[in-house]
Length: 347
Image 1 (cartoon, rainbow, N blue to C red):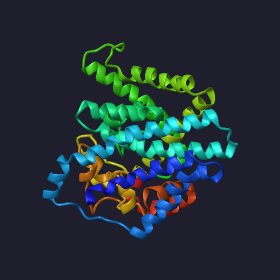
Image 2: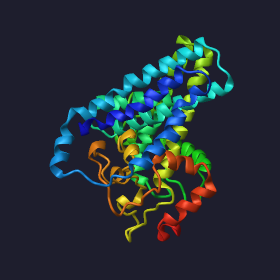
Image 3: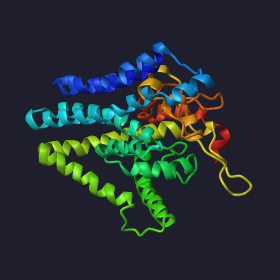
Image 4: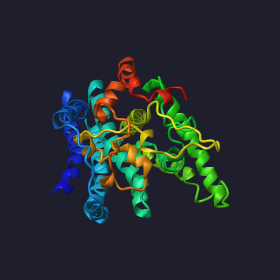
């Protein structure tokens, strides 16, 4: 039964369904659930820093249950998008209701699309990586697959990484620098991959070109099937979702740095180069993304196998509460800056 605890991750799509079927303040159900109810549940259930045994890890590594729970997010996410686009097409909403629907849909995509896509993007089987790319599509962030896997994991906690927030950088400034640099870096990564394969820029293996065809086709498809308003809504929701992603990037790497070795290369990525969070509910809802230190230490590890390390810097709150905290920069700096290792502040 413990293996089924990750079914709790479907409570976010459930809250989105309630939002999409509601009017008035009910359209904010996912917002209330993600940023009020989940942080409260984190506080009352506390942290869980225990790691599974080697024997259990071997059993969990090959269990199909954990994979199926990821795969089901694909029909759930696209089914809910169809629902909300249909609602936008057929119903009249006040501006504040559209904002509620947009935020709720953005939260759905950030948690059950981008987050799941991130996990699947690290897998070896092609069909899993393909599902991951499909989940990035409505978030309008397909290039993240390339930059994250071939850029971020190599450059994390260095000035070369757009997804690592600088010490004393606000989340709002980080949105701009991270979104723009990761897009440019995705192109650079793609060009390097093509050169390695001795392929020209205009190649079927140029995924960045495909992404720039697939995502506009998706947007046009929303317009053709539903309406112009639904298309604008789809674009807005995509932006909201990747800004939530960048907020997560912000809290995961804020102020942390790797140092250069005498050879001039950066030291190997270690558990102390990402912020960790062991709050139980956040771990389950986000498929262990909050054990981010181990993910960067061993990126091929499946989510159900991630460990907690004593040397990992720890967020004082769970992910939802930390995101809210980051939206108030003076308070974020007051709480987080003392937690950043002194030697990293000087780098």
